[in-house]
Length: 505
Image 1: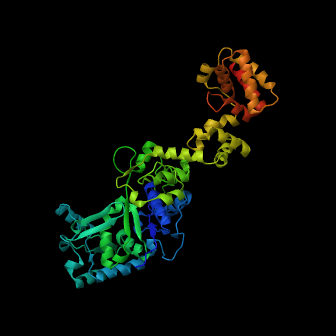
Image 2: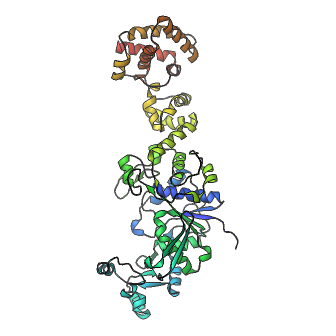
Image 3: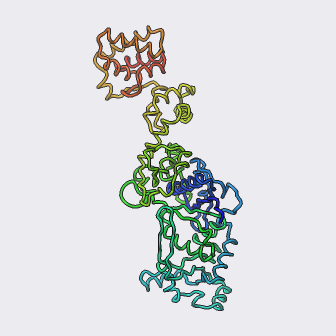
């Protein structure tokens, strides 16, 4: 048989914001597809109409646009296997439901929610399966005539898959190896509901994967219990030859304690769990996003790629292209991956250093302008070059850099007490006269002249520079003094120096 082209899919439900765990699943699918010269399909699983949230689908698409994960076909991307929204594929699914019923692989059940609840109360650990189906109201116990009559009378029903007991179901998993499940522990899952004429996740998934020629299903570990049923469904349809290979990714775990990562962990510890900010249309609640927090998309991608996958080398910083080249799904961990959000901040800092000063300045310029400062771009670039290694996020630059653009109007009390000595006003007055006399105001010449003056006067260099810094910056922090004076220029340096002498005495 000819080798099939690799085709994978990411199929979220539009039930709210996209969790960062879903982003990682999409990323691994993307890396796998690109590595094998295959296709990545974007499908929307919206068969559960009660959980649909307006705006969620658009939010998911916008998230991937920001992250740079590109799909080859699917909702909003087009393609030969559409429609790609499950709610638009009703007629397709009905045909396959009828096929299973005709072959005796599925049956119709009329049990009401109340009847099912009563049975749960009566039988401990009740599940609808080969041992209990004979006790229930379904086509197997009622017979064909009664079943047809109930349907004709408008009774609502579901179609259940008929799981045969006593079988060993093998799921070959690219990460976990051969997973064997006994069919006796599986229940007769609902595949279709007459109430909304839509299939459940299980049937829709199988039919779509088959018709869209999906070769590999890479999804979260939480779907592993569904895999045996999906294998049985492929068999029931006679599609064993086109059954995709499975890979169930490890869970993302809380940064602390036990259990999987949730939005509450992010709220509690102050980090986002969604790619973009999400405004819940039902509750009005606003949840933080990685984009709005100031993360670079490349940093988020790099951070997520290493949560559950290890390249087997010391390398930590990867471009998307490098990830495509090095990704190996068999090297994914079976154990859950702890969501170390502090490492995410570290990645952002590393990408800050990797980016050009011009690129960071483009992002910083609107913040400068937003603070009422009109500066040309070349001066903003200069400030970024001096200060970007001190921050993790672009938004953190302004509190550290504002003194470059706005002179201090007050002076940090603690620094004044510590750095402004009894003779500081006199020494700074002298320094102002020295600076006034410098004609070549290049950084190198300033430093040479000022240092020679300090030495000739026998002053302590630390005392002079600390008072000088306080006068120009307003606090005892910042880059080198002559970097600052070079940026400010002679006139502004003198103005600030004389203002501090006047205020601090």
